[in-house]
Image (cartoon, rainbow, N blue to C red; front, side, top):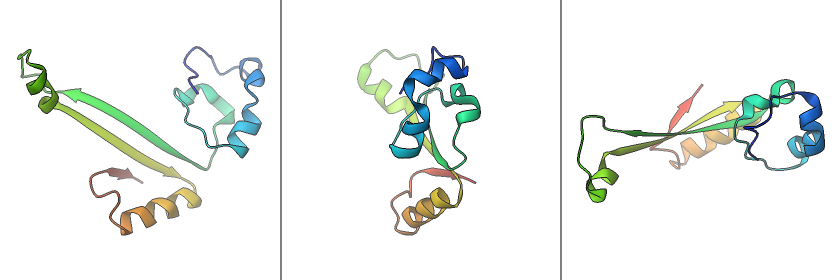
Amino acid sequence: MDLYRLSGKEEELKPLDMDHVLKECVSLIEWPSRLGYMTPTTRLDITFRISRDSDSEEEDSESDAEEIERTLTLRAHGAHWEERLRLLVDEGYLDDLIIED
């Protein structure tokens, strides 16, 4: 769900039935800051970052692919998500990821 165009006002969120969506569904939400007071206290935040090496000026698409760094950060909110992430870490599934406390 992309909330970019919303300001977070209750009247904008009401047609989306966010109470139901956040309690009963698995949701991927872009621009979650737009949820305002409706932001769940128990959640998993996933942040994608893509950065380029600013020293490179090559235009070759093959070398560009090597110079792009992609980072996925998971941040648990609440005991439920903290436990789930701990299990994934213990099993080695997240060895290449950064987990923020």
